[in-house]
Image (cartoon, rainbow, N blue to C red; front, side, top):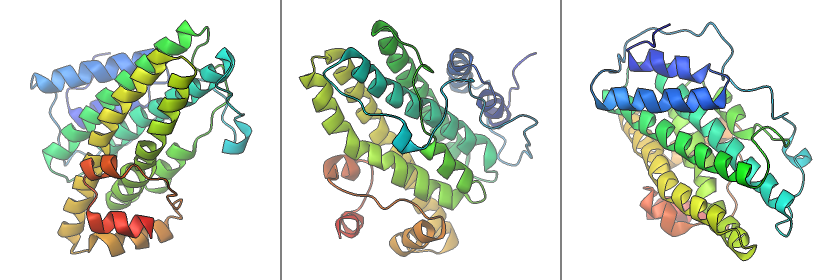
Amino acid sequence: MAAPDELRARALACLIEPDPAIKVAAVYAMATASQEGACLPDPQAALASSAAIPGRPEKPDLVPPLQVGRRAMNTPEGRAMLIHALAHIEFNAINLALDAIWRFPGLPAEYYTDWLQVAREEAYHFSLLQAHLQRLGYSYGEFLAHDSLWEMVEKTSDDVLARMALVPRTLEARGLDANPPLRAKLAQAGDKEAATILDIILRDEIGHVEIGNRWYGFLCRQRGLELIPAYAELARQYNAPTPRGPFNLEARRQAGFTEEELLALQG
């Protein structure tokens, strides 16, 4: 069956695909078609899914975060568990970007192409981590994983403002803080390839959080809301996790957080 040529419908088709390799290839193909002008968004299209969202493989088994297990960096299996956890985050991140494209109508065309860029880069990150996992003798699905990121995606399915506030600006921004210490541990353990992959992820994730910040600001202005009070109310309403330091302040600045927001975060 031919892929739909409208961007949001095609994003939905990618989202419900359960096979990670097929999903990644479909995201790459969609991004290429978009760049060539062959796959444009229809912001007003009324879409619905006839399949479960998101499409995902039978493995990994999903458990509460505390049951995932410890990751000792001094063993190959421990490093593989960490790489697997990161791969699972990136797989979920592909799906969250695709969901942001298809689910929310009525936004400027640039919103949809911004999130397509995110989907493509998350697919690249997943591919890098999956390949490294295989070099360590494992594959995606062999370890347990948790679903905290996707749970917030589901909770914010009713409002694009909440989605922008609490997924890229909250959960993905936590990745900016977590990346440097994880990179240091992997480098200290002698896994230079994994450290290099984390450098790539940090570089791109700054851009992803910036996209979330930019569209959050756009939506706040559109609705006549002040950024910081609106964020606090959304975090309360949706029971978002409270960010805890240490914070990667420089990365957060690059991602578009204002000094006022950073002070509020630290306070």
